[in-house]
Length: 241
Ligand SMILES: *[C@@H]1O[C@H](CO)[C@@H](O)[C@H](O)[C@H]1NC(C)=O
Ligand SMILES: *[C@@H]1O[C@H](CO)[C@@H](O)[C@H](O)[C@H]1NC(C)=O
Ligand SMILES: *[C@@H]1O[C@H](CO)[C@@H](O)[C@H](O)[C@H]1NC(C)=O
Ligand SMILES: *[C@@H]1O[C@H](CO)[C@@H](O)[C@H](O)[C@H]1NC(C)=O
Ligand SMILES: [Cu+2]
Image (cartoon, rainbow, N blue to C red; front, side):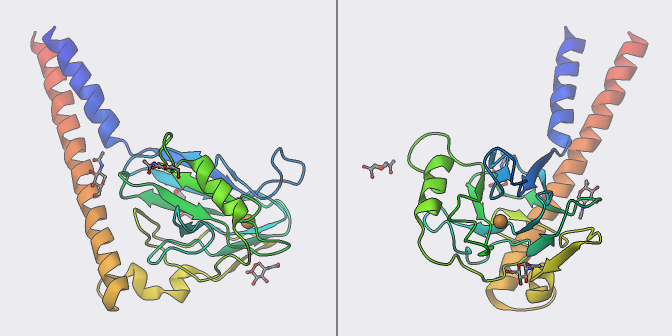
């Protein structure tokens, strides 16, 4: 009985310590169900610490992952994250990817593709959500409907690596031959990733996110440590029983 409880707690500690990884494909083939202009899947649930890997696999393609808001689906959110555009002439390996770590799972994270050519991708429904409510008014379906209803050119502003509720630490990579990266956030907003330089809102945002990341890391490692000591205790318990 004691050992069963111990192992249950141990399994729980392990699940909490492990940082999950999820994958979203950016763009698709013309022959794909749903066409070129989509993220697959376009809505996921991802707790704090999850690394969401956006794989730019849709070829040919020229897409972005740009944070927006429920109320304004096709314009960049102030202080939001942005991958920049990745152009792919044909399927390439290795697949260029962008890792976005979830830092706040208590609020929905909305994003869109800001490419306008050949027609605005956002208006074609190329939007996605992380931790969107599944009931009520602010569902992913309602967000996508608002994106499709959006008229005019979607916002082209270049965001930062660090966004609201999620952040990346590097640009899309690797860039194989046949692929080109445009409007990289690390170049456009270099201070956004460095808490020691820059000033104002950007610096504040990045400072907050950095400390959140640090907190997460240390809580993850203390969970790791408790996992180890519990594992040790369980092993010793069994050994000496
Ligand atoms: C990809 O999109 C960016 C941003 O719209 C644009 O500057 C670039 O020329 C495009 N690349 C190609 C090869 O179409
Ligand atoms: C995730 O992180 C946010 C921001 O630090 C925090 O408010 C929230 O409670 C965390 N979620 C969980 C489930 O711990
Ligand atoms: C949802 O939208 C409806 C119609 O616009 C509105 O009457 C209702 O108050 C909204 N519900 C919430 C929880 O905001
Ligand atoms: C994304 O994360 C994965 C898993 O940790 C790693 O193998 C990969 O190199 C990362 N890619 C980039 C571009 O940072
Ligand atoms: Cu796109």
